[in-house]
Amino acid sequence: MTTAQPLKIAPLNTKEAFERIGDLPLFQEISHTFAQSLVGNLTSIKNAMKAQQWHDAMRMAHSLKGTLAIVGAEDLREIATLLEYSCRDEKAEEAEKNLAILKQTKEQLIEALNKI
Image 1 (cartoon, rainbow, N blue to C red):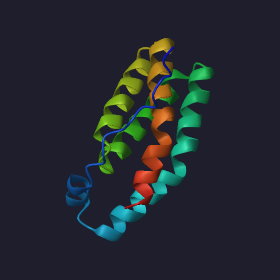
Image 2 (cartoon, rainbow, N blue to C red):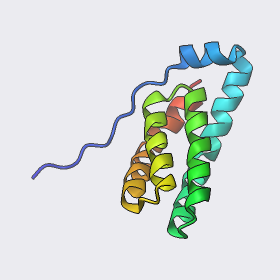
Image 3 (cartoon, rainbow, N blue to C red):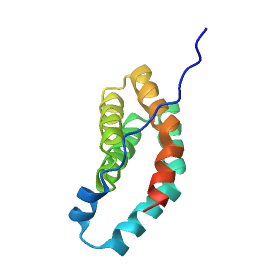
């Protein structure tokens, strides 16, 4: 019997993200603020989905997608895009799957963001 390996996220593309922002202290502030709010954001999306408030869940997933792009987390941005679309289409099973991926990788992402 094999045990499931934890998901690994790709390294952040901090070079491109920094070039987009152009200001290291601002980039660090955005990254650290996002790291602090990530767990709460994921919980809010989960609660909206649970209450079948699909428009709210879609809007929050859209915001999450944008912030993931800003900090250079391209792989996770793609997952957040899938989450946004599955919430838009009210596909609960698909949305749960995508949210689960984001939740499984949150600690790796927080650690990477806090190193910036």
